[in-house]
Length: 96
Image (cartoon, rainbow, N blue to C red):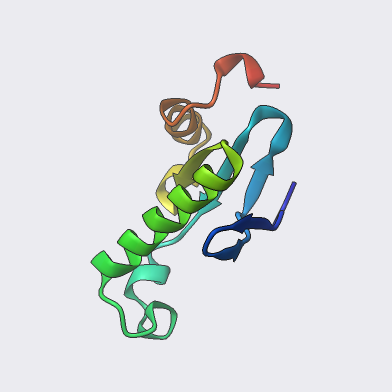
């Protein structure tokens, strides 16, 4: 499911991708989110990265699901993407 709202103790977050039946969610973030001043809202790249990790933990705690993360480098190559999500907990038997 795309953009499925998740209520957490900190408010509602909306992961990019959710697989409720698999208890997984995924977030796609490009480098622009960390380095574009308008998107970073005055935060350093490290602060943006820490905020993303915090958000992921909040969603995991609220749902009991496992979160995954990838960017353009991983998404650009199907084999790299596959290895990336498997390394983050996706089960190979789920591959269609």
